[in-house]
Length: 429
Ligand code: OSB
Ligand code: MG
Image (cartoon, rainbow, N blue to C red):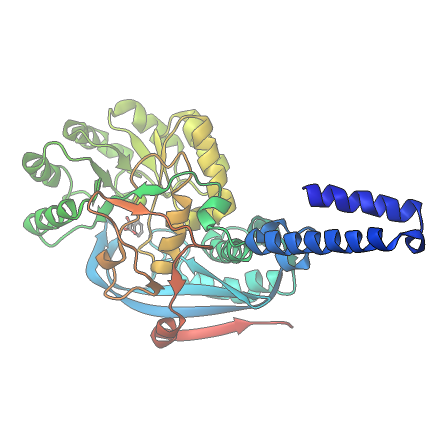
């Protein structure tokens, strides 16, 4: 500071008198101040890269975008009300900008069952529309991405993959942890698990036992007609106190209100998405008839949905999935709407690889993520994750966020290359 003001005084002096009229002593004094100022400037820039004024280094010129389909078998099958899967086809995007590569995961599933989006709708939407809309553009912040992609309606999952990859670059360019760049405040995030429908109730009880021993703070069970009240009776008679919730993935209709009211007997933290995937209005009707809090997942595609759901009383909790809402910018908006209305949120999962998981961790540090998320350790899903280190959950059911730039996890490009079954690069046209 002192050096800067001295230096500007000197500039003033230099302008008011010509340089030629400066004495030798004044000149050497000026030189040393300038050198000192430059040194300080270089030092500060190095440490706090983002403050470099007027530098072109903090812009991201998008050179090319690569899509990869990576096959990863799950450690254990995962079954929801819409079906069972044994293995994931994961779509990764990497964005090349000025020597830095940013990574994003498109969480679209293998089939259009959770959402109308699926991997084979996301792929051509990326190569034909979304990637070309970004190539050659220069951005300074990840949050500028949605405006460039807005011509395409829907397709939020591939949009999110691109936007999040740009936030990843921005964070590393600024040498800041991604969670701080997103506005996070939490240093530790609370973890829950989502347990799928099993072959038998005994198999389910065994799984719950394992997850409780591992320290997870909330158990969420997938339910559907025929695997719900009967299962909850068994679980609650063994564990009367644990924090327990259920996720129906739209398996019920309003004809089943009487049946759904039976869920009230089990002291559940919430019932997630009981009715149609695109409905908010009838959830508001149902919420009036239930004591258990409804949590919306599928129905919330953007901040306006969240505002409508909250104002109409359709839910008391919202699950935020960054892919479902189209990227970090919209996820933050959903978070803020809920925060302003005192509705807690938690971070949902889509059986992500480490790339998406690490970004979910960063998002979960925002203040209103007040309930344990479906962000669990890598080893619950994968024998070997594609990031290093793998995501670890403590015995207390917490993940500690990292202070390194970006997510704090390194993407294992060598392993990704081995697991890749399809690859396409979109470059300058
Ligand atoms: O509804 O939360 C869901 C997985 C795929 C599709 C939808 C959902 C889920 C999960 C898994 O519940 C959560 C996880 O990643 O552990
Ligand atoms: Mg869900």
